[in-house]
Image 1 (cartoon, rainbow, N blue to C red):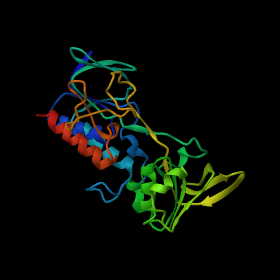
Image 2: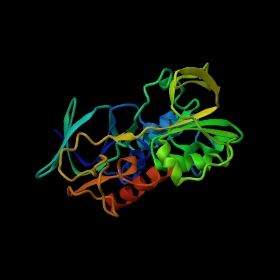
Image 3: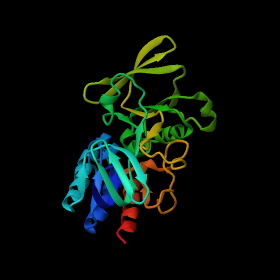
Image 4: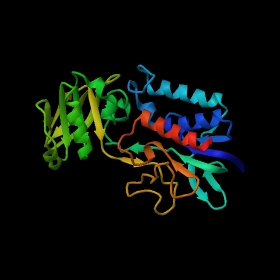
Length: 289
C-alpha cells in the first residue's frame, strides 16, 4: 500500500490547482480521477471569463493545467474512489487499489441532473449550458431558452434577458411572483422539451405544449434541473448537508481531521473555474506550510 503526503480526489480546476502547489513544493502527491482530467470544464467549448485567458475551450485549459502538474511530478491515476476511512491514518480505497496519506483533499464537484431528452448530450457545450453566468456574454442578441427548476435559475434568466434578444422560460410558474419579467421574456406554460435539434450546434428545440408539438428556433439553452454532488463515497454522518455538499469551515476543513474539501463539492453561491482555482490555491498554500 503506497503512502502519500497528500491525496487529491478529483482533477477539475480545484483539484489541479491544489496539485500544482503541492508538486512545486516537492510533496509526494497523488491525484485520483475516475474520468478525464478537467471535470465539468471539459463541457465548455469557450471560456472567456477566466483571468489571463482571453478565450479558449475548457478542454484546452484543462490540458494546460494537467501539463503543469505533470511537469511538477504529481502522480496521477485514473481510478474511482469507493471509500474513505480515517482511523490512525487516512485510507483511500479505489476500484483497483488502496492508498494512505497524511492529508486528503476532496475536489469531486457535482454532476448536473439531465432532462433525459433526445440529443441533450450531443449539444452540451454546443448550445446547451448549465451556467448562465458563465456563458452570458455568448447570448448577446441571441434567442435563448431557460429551463428553470428553482428561483436562482429564474434570477439568472432575468439577467440573461438584459443581454439576449429573447428569453423563453420553462419553469415552475409559482416562482414567477418573485421576479420581474422583462419585455423580452416569454413563459411557455404547460410545455415540455421533446428534443434538441441541429447539426454541429444547437439551432432549435422541439417542444410539446399541451397536445401540440412545435419547433422553436433558438441559439442557446440553459438547463437548471438540479445537480448531484459527487460525495457518495464518504460515509460519515454529518459530513455533508442535506443536498450532499460537503460541509467545511473558512479554511475548507471538514469534520474529519486532515480532510479538506474544495470547489463545486462544497456549498458556495458561485461555482466557476475561477472560484474553483481560488479554493485549490488557498488549500494548496495551507498544505505546503
